[in-house]
Length: 446
Image 1 (spheres, rainbow, N blue to C red):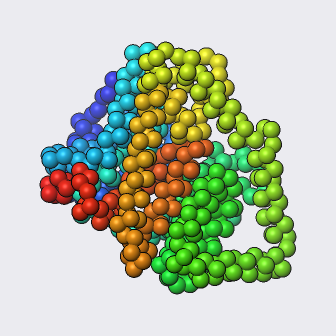
Image 2 (cartoon, rainbow, N blue to C red):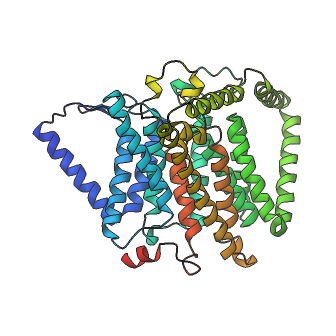
Image 3 (spheres, rainbow, N blue to C red):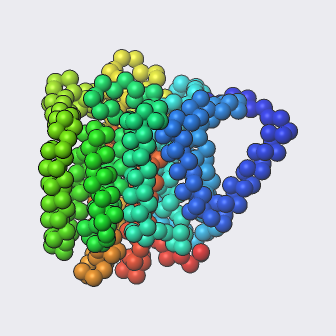
């Protein structure tokens, strides 16, 4: 919960706050898309480089994630104020989940009193707010699939550069990752590693499906190597599943390119084995150690599953209200007993079930089902062979699948929420004439 203390400001601070508020309000009114892009990007960068980890003391400790969340909520309110005829129906399940989080915050205040921020409620709010805000954007701000793919590929390349500089000790490794005992350390968290892997999916899409040049082929191989080297097994599975779907959906139309990609990869690996045998042994040991760790009795997956079971059993033993709506916010720090894995749950689905009950988890699953329906409808509308690849259906399908799989062992963040929102706006393009999705009123209002 958000800690509340007496806020005192000097006249100069008040003037600065009003000026900043006016600028943000003006930007939300005139350029909401760019404001959201700036907020999400700045939050991701400050977290990546551990900038402002101490927060700013203004009566309470504020972090940049809090500021980004406030900007997203402000932008959403401004968009709804301008669009008085309604909003997309697909927003409703996410909005229900958002309100359940707010309700549990109030229940937590009633149960435990006002406390400092730090529980999972903030994490869920930060995950859902960018998705809702992006879904409310006017259609004039919607990117098409090609632009989204380029954004993701560029972001993946930037994060790969950061990882390489950290491996080369040019940039410091974040404190939370310094204790890694692997031969090749994990120097990016899973949320950033997933974006590198999704950059690999996007680069593969451009090279194989859109038939772009050698630069995209090189980007595919480079991003793939970095994804493997980052050693997040759950990211491997999520990206591998998305890539497999991309291949399945495009093999009939781009079989030659897929064969070429496989051939180039095999040749590059063979040359690498001959030229750098010691490096190949390192990679072989890297993969073997990760597989061996995953199969061990004390593996992180075994630890997580035990936490899932304990958290689920604990929820079912509670009162009916808690089973339906989850436990009051702040329950993590006020729980007696229980393992760390059952309190800090490494799964979006199980964490939402434990924290927000059957209703909250149901709202999340329905919302993801809405995303899946829109992604599938996009592929159906653009099913013609001449339009199918250009409109980006295989790309957004692969990206969405990687997101859904990633949520099994990890919780969502600002990046994942923004990605879901972007996938939705791309999927909605071209569907307005097929059905009434609730966007016609929004288009008229703008």
